[in-house]
Image 1 (tube, rainbow, N blue to C red):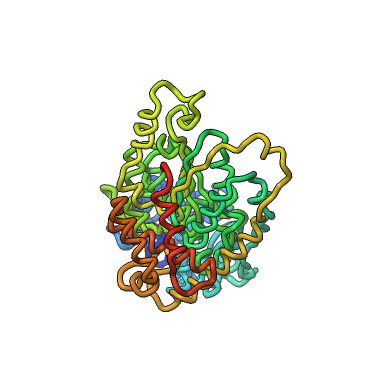
Image 2 (spheres, rainbow, N blue to C red):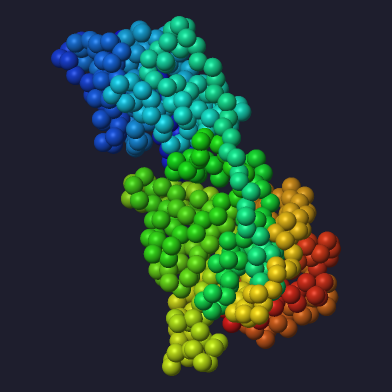
Length: 502
């Protein structure tokens, strides 16, 4: 007796189809799993045996062999329990064979037969939709998988429910997509007293997804400003939300099976390892730069990060993706994020205050910020000084524009870019401009070009720096609602690149 069921093996955000073959043949009683399983998959036979026993289903005194095909693809995770049980039930003719063959299943079994939610339901649903099969998963994972409209998702609470569903005793109603209630943010740009130039830099960065670095003394408001970036960013489009949620699904970060349209804001501590930031570890899991896809990666105290970790950011910043290469895994993850960095001007933080600076000033400032390599700094579009706020300003009532007002301008600029890049493959915001498209869409007028050429010669801008100034100038023009890039737009873009100590 043979039967088949189907499941998936995860390689990055891709869920590859795996055929679970079950053969029940004469011979000494045994239950073996082959096909390059890891320890968690090999242990599935004991969980399946116990789950069937709880349903009063005895395994025959025969040899049971489970093969996971393709056999050269590593199989990891406890989600293979349910497809193995499904194939075995079909081989024992307890459920119809065509039911198991038309289903992609994933789920972990408890010893009493109940199904435990697993990670990766959303990518699995994408594969099920592509293969035109039904997805069978634990009930708690159903709302997450149901966000894929093209897939039929069956969420079961136990293996007994699965049997009753496929034998027609009690069909399970297909799952519906979950919802996440996004609480309104209590933060607002008006909470930040002063710092008008830094607020302007935040607006430009948010509008074009440009990378930003803030340098200032402790307590000047760098972290406070960064924390308010999500309040001025537009919500993700359905496509962006699905891309980001697939990565979060692999890490089990989706709350109550719902998809949040709020852009991710990741802020890892400066002691984070390379695997935590870039990705890696067991199974080459995604890191913070991928979890921040379509959102913001905030690195506070940038010079305190490990130098090797910082250097690994250079390639993802340029390409919008990262390849996690390990001896047994080569996995590519999307990582199109907006980098926001903050740093003190020196180790003690008071380089600009002669009364509080250490005896090594100004050499200490050069040494401290020198921990950030030139190639990495060259990839940061906007650099702004954040000076301390006077105590008299702190006593003043909130002033300046609210986050809602700034967000409206940012959203308008983003809509212009969405229309502009609708026919461009791989380009979404002005930060993605390159090649001939950059020459066509970010070409300044004669006065603006003359200013840029003179500034490039005087300040020694690299070719990358030259192009990044053009991208920022394009965003500034978009915020002003102007089609042409003029001299004032170029001048402001240059001021955020060569007019700061950062």
